[in-house]
Amino acid sequence: MSTVEKAISLLNFFTEDTPEWGLSELARQARFDKATTRRLLVALANSGLIEQHTVTRRYQLGAGLLRLARVRESHFPLLQVAVPVLRDVAASTDETVHLSEFGGRGLVTLHVEESTKANRVSVSTGQILPLHATASGIAFLAFSPSQLARSYLRKSLTAFTRHTLVQPARLDDAINAAAEHGYSRGEQGYEDGVFSIAAPILGLDGYAIGSIAIAMPQSRNTKATTERHIQAVRGAARAISTRLFGEQPTPRHARVA
Amino acid sequence: MSTVEKAISLLNFFTEDTPEWGLSELARQARFDKATTRRLLVALANSGLIEQHTVTRRYQLGAGLLRLARVRESHFPLLQVAVPVLRDVAASTDETVHLSEFGGRGLVTLHVEESTKANRVSVSTGQILPLHATASGIAFLAFSPSQLARSYLRKSLTAFTRHTLVQPARLDDAINAAAEHGYSRGEQGYEDGVFSIAAPILGLDGYAIGSIAIAMPQSRNTKATTERHIQAVRGAARAISTRLFGEQPTPRHARVA
DNA sequence: AACTAACGGATCAAATAATGATCCATGGAT
DNA sequence: ATCCATGGATCATTATTTGATCCGTTAGTT
Image (cartoon, rainbow over all chains, first blue to last red; front, side, top):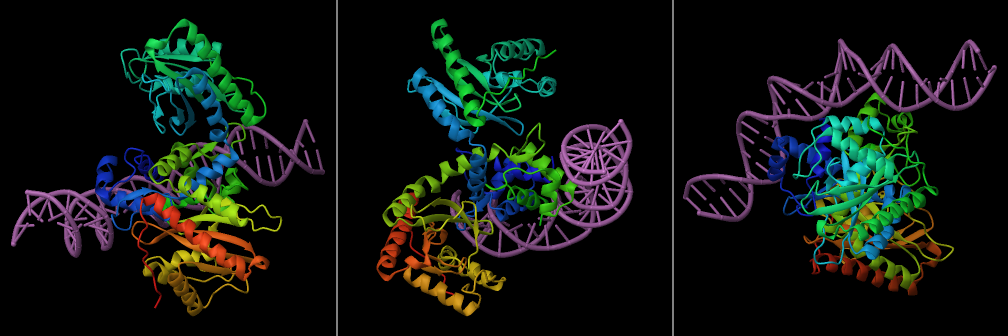
């Protein structure tokens, strides 16, 4: 892990739940030396990615992030384009719909539109989704350069539930099925009782850049609705690609051998 | 400049105008060695702050930034709170209004609502404003810990126009006037022909966290309108503080000796 | 088709910057 | 009044970053 990666990894400790950190607390959590942590924080603060409250001396995310996020969004308006589409899908299905993009080392959940039902699936923004255990991940892998899928298969496949696909062969099957049909199913692979359907959002090169998924309680997974959900999620994913690039990219499957 | 700061400084080359960079091009611009630049970019990419286009091999800002910006905005909803206020001011004055926040080493312009007039001032998001040459900067300095103001006064005071305040004594006067009246004027200090009025947005500790400013062509700087603009910008700045913190912070002036 | 130039990327000895044990001052809590 | 945890500073040791140089590709020119 390079110094730069260490510094940035500190940023990831700042979440909706813990948006502020004291120095010692953060050092302990990140398992860095206190002095090291401080130096990294100071560097981040000098760059505007972190700010320090002058009174409490606690650290929080800085204004520089807003600026950079704006630049990115103005160049590549994923959220701007996708959020209305997600909203439509959420409205027409009344199930939780979420968008994730591949960035760095995993699928980052960027936006969530929740169902209005009392019994619904809650997803929180910022969550990193494991590729092998979620519908979103499988959909993404199915349309990724096969090298990526394969290198991922070699890594440790954590079992989050009894249903998580941990045998490489079964994961291959799931990926191949997703590549063939253009969508994937996740049946309690990450969290018990959650069923989801996902489709990949393709980039101009035909490879997936992320996914969109509908998540619902397993109990609402009925034949009749599922078919509608598949259509909705595939249509939404294609709409997002088309609006982003002005055309529908030609999919590039990644069959795993 | 630490390695971390170097890496993050690379991010700042990605702007609305140049949102993509090739490796060599960026290395030249940043005056880093090509190998160094690449290592830094790879580290940033591993962390999700940068992404590389698989085909063109060019680099652009990554999805991780969106996530972090969201976390910050949900913890400290400056934009969410301020944008509607800016919109009101822009609508009622029909002049360009912009919001900046102090982060890292300068005032970062976070949002702009432009006038609908043909002859208007254009400000672009992401611009870094010099503290001594803009109304926003003076307003900020006037309500900053005096240490900050003083250390800034020691630094080189670049003259952007013939009107830029470069003599420390005159800058002191401007800061003191702003501290006294709660707003500042910028008369062509940064760009010729631009007149602006700014007020500080105060944090809970009573020190400024940023500013809000109205900018217009010098020709429209008339006594009658100026008084209205002063009221508008002061009211807006106070409204933002109040909505952010639920109370109006007690201002802490920073009289310069 | 051969040549050139610029590109992204990889390598590794030398140079430099990061590390962490240790110390200090401050502020709550008991 | 004492204790303990905090944020911050120091500096010899250590590990990482650096950059000259190399390589294979691609795109433009002759």
